[in-house]
Amino acid sequence: MIYGYARVSTIGQDYETQVELLTAAGCEEIFHEKVTGSKMARKQLDLLFSKLNEGDTFVVTRLDRFARSTVEGLTTTKNLFEQGIKVHILNLGLIENTPTGRLILANFFAFAEFERDMILERTAEGKKRAKLNPDFREGRPKKFTKAQIDFALGLLKEMSYTEVAKNTGISKSTLIRANRKRSK
Image 1 (cartoon, rainbow, N blue to C red):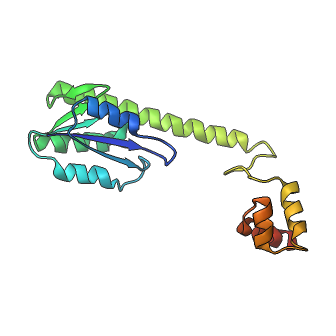
Image 2 (cartoon, rainbow, N blue to C red; image 1 turned 30 degrees about the vertical axis):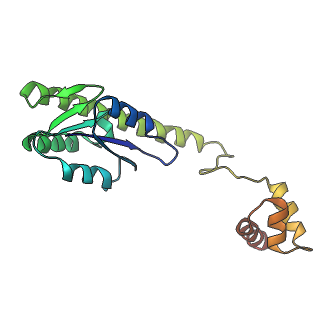
Image 3 (cartoon, rainbow, N blue to C red; image 1 turned 135 degrees about the vertical axis):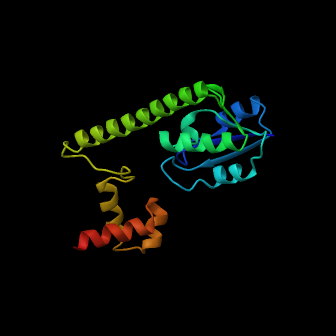
């Protein structure tokens, strides 16, 4: 049996492209999930691993879809090889359980981990630089301007929170929070 695994890191991402590639590669059953690669618990991957039997093939589109580090990747593929399971990484090809195959895989895992570490480093540098700007605010941008919130809070003199929320589109909880902040 040929099993495929697709993973994306965030809710906003879509694993459909991976699923299409896995289907084209002949996967008979595909497991997919939206979970960051830094999480230890990946339920669909664990479920897939529990179904694999000798002679089966495990397929992923790229190395970083199933392993977070070189050590984890090498351990996982070693375990799969020991169970007689073939490993096919679409952008690399079928990985053979030979000294050469394992050497090539180790190098690719090392480069994948290096790439991930570099992304994290660049992200941290960018954040550090952005924080030098006095107007920098971490997190999601505000949906409403201060003037819009002030206007809505002014309406509370004559209307209830629910009525103001209905008329302005600003949620009741946002209005309550803003009113509490203003009262301090």
